[in-house]
Image (cartoon, rainbow, N blue to C red):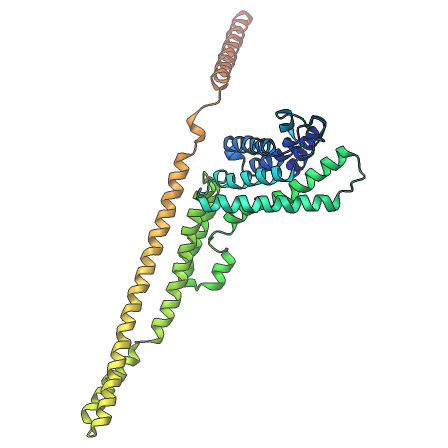
Amino acid sequence: MGAQVGVAALLAAAAVTDSLPELAVVPLAAGAVATIPSRWLHGIGLVAASFAVAMLVGVAMDGPTTLSSWLTAGATTAAPVLHGAQAFAAAAVVGAGLPFLDDGPSEAWRSVNGALAVAAATGLGGWAATQLVPGAWVPVAVAVVGALVVGLVASQTLTVLALRHHSSDRVPTREVIARTLSEVHRGPALIAWQLDQDLAQICPDLDTRDGLGEVAAWIYRLQFTRQQLERERDRVGGPDVEVRIVGLTEQASAADDAFTRDRLLATVDHLQRLRGHRGALESEIERAGALAAYATAFLEEARAELTLARVQPGDASPDRLPVVLSRLRTYSEDQSLARKTQREVAQAVGAMST
C-alpha cells in the first residue's frame, strides 16, 4: 500500500504538470500489479488498457478536459482534470481484468463483479475526495491529494483477492483438532495439518495452495464424521438389541392374545431394522476411513512431486568452484614442496655436521 501511495502521488503530479490527466488512472491499475507481482506481464497490459480506455472515453465526450482535447478541435485551454466518466471506465477495466491477475478462474461473472466493485469504489473515492480536499488549495495539491484519496478508497477492492484465498477451506489448527477430535481420530488430522504446512512453502501458485488446503480440510472433516458416526453406532444396534430381539420373539411365541403377539412381532421388526442401520453405519465409517487414507496419500505424493519439481541445490555448482579448487590444489602443492625442501635442507645440514 505504501508503494501504491507513492506511485499515486508521483503520477498525479505528472498528470497536472504535463496536462496528461489520463495518467491519474494508472495508479489504480499499478496497485493491482503490485498486489499480484507474479503476473506482472498481464499487469502491464491492464495498465495500458485502463489508460487507453480513459483516453478513448475522453475522445467520445464533448469538450473533454483531457489528453483527447489535443486530438479534437478546440478545447485547448481546458484545465487538466480527469472527467468522472473516464475514471469510471478505467476503473471498470481494472476490475474486469483482476481475474486474469490472481491465477483464479477467469469466468465472465468474476470479471463483471470486479468491474462493478472497482468502479463503485472509484466513485466513492471521488465523492470522498470532493468532500475532504479543500478547493482553496493549490491546484497541484488538490489534484495530488484527490488522486491519493480516490486511489486509496478504490484500492480497497483489491483486498477481495486476498480474502478469496484466506477464506477458502483450510484444515483447522492443532489446538482446534485436539479440542474437537478424540485421541483415536486425531492422528490423520494432525498429519494433514503438517502436510498442509509443508505444502504452503512449496506451492507454485495460490490456486494450487487452495486446492491442496481443501484436501487437508477434507481429511479433518472425514475424521470428524467418523467420530460422529461411531458415536451414533454405539447408540444403536448394540448387543442389547440382540438380547431384546430374542426376548421379544420368545414373548410373542408364548402370547395367547393376537394383538399382543402382533405388537411384539412389530417391535422385533423395528429392532431388526435398527440392527441393519448399525451395519450401514459401519460401512460409512469404513468408507470415511478409506477416503481419509486416500487423501493423506494424495497430499504426501503432492509434497514429493512439488519438492522434486523445485530446483535443488545440487543441480548447479557455484560459478567460482573450479577457481577455488584450482587455488586449493596449487596451495597444497606449494606447501608439500616447501615441506620437502625443508626436509632435504635438514638432512643436508645434518650430514655436514657429522
